[in-house]
Image (cartoon, rainbow, N blue to C red):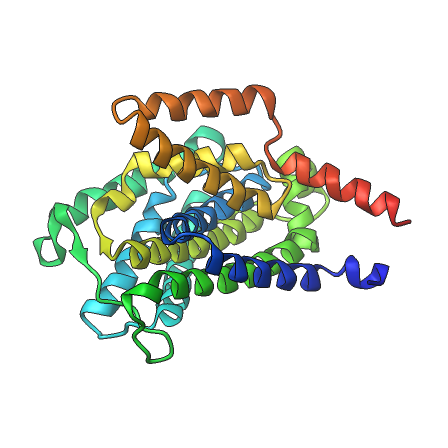
Length: 320
């Protein structure tokens, strides 16, 4: 393998996607489901990472997570659209549009004000959803079984096919985000994080950066909500509750903002810790989760992504 091919991001990403798709055939069905849920949460976490690169953190990503989930659910129950890829794509576009509409308001604020205002949007939506009995109220509603290019798979293969769709769509989104992070707007976001005033003096707009990043984060959150809803087969207002948003922040802190794959690894760790602690310590699993986060912050302050960055930096030096 030539050095040029080895360092090609697209080639590496496609190879990783194919590898994960093959792994899905070998692992038990429960783990396929857990990984699919982790991908859904990782997409939302990736949106928060995009915001973090510009110096912002949203405590209310449950807002777009819920909108994405309900968009997929209502399209399935009311419009008869059941194709998983189509539902994910439409949810991405719709929540991205919603994000673009409210982003100019949120982009005027920074620090805790941005975080709390985003949380307020999420809790307002939660209050609305639990009152609308036509869409299930506090109980939510069940989604119809998904199809793939018009074909409804058997229950034996349904989880695996959704896993494959999640891997493919998330893989290409991650590639595009990596290119965005390394582009001029993406690098300006890092500059805004360090010194917003200096960026403004140099002629760039910190406001526009915040609007763009929040729009991207909204689209990713909506796709994550749709994927999670399809995987569970059920949508309810808890998608928008503040504890759900807190889990996304947990993932983002654990991952750090230095690496895209680290976000999905952090989401998978969260799902595994929650699954096993919930099984073996059903009354204290929140305590286990809290201790896990504390230890992560103490021993990995820059997040899991720092290990990825160090690895690839050493790899590049060794190939020179």
